[in-house]
Image 1: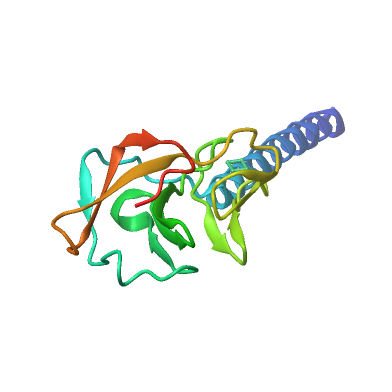
Image 2: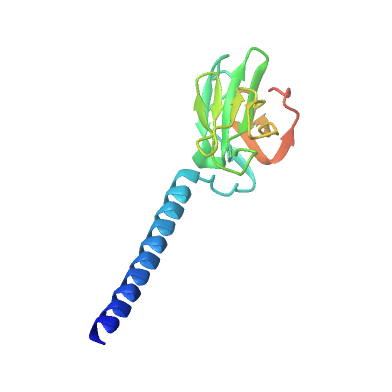
Length: 153
Ligand code: FES
């Protein structure tokens, strides 16, 4: 009789342990997935003034303004443009990588103009309006106004 009781208790303890272990593993997997997702912070509305001027950005320049407004300022032979740092796949923050941008969440890649070079993202990164605050003055990037990918200042 007491053997049956201890066996029931033992089974019950094993079941409880398995449930606890399963829950712990699920929570661990969820926290790892969340930590690696690195979602971009929400885009703040309104124009952003940066210290750069058009003259301070020669072709090949790239400035990281992800903290200010989720964009990069890039200069090529045609001029200066602002490209969004928000991945078009699921909204993570892309980072500069060699000749373009890469997303740490699911490995999408984009060229410097924001065109997709590797999925799963299907859409290019947005481009924002860039203007001078005054002739030759600091640049203003308006993250509320998207422009064509070939627009340059
Ligand atoms: S969020 Fe960038 S690849 Fe998925």
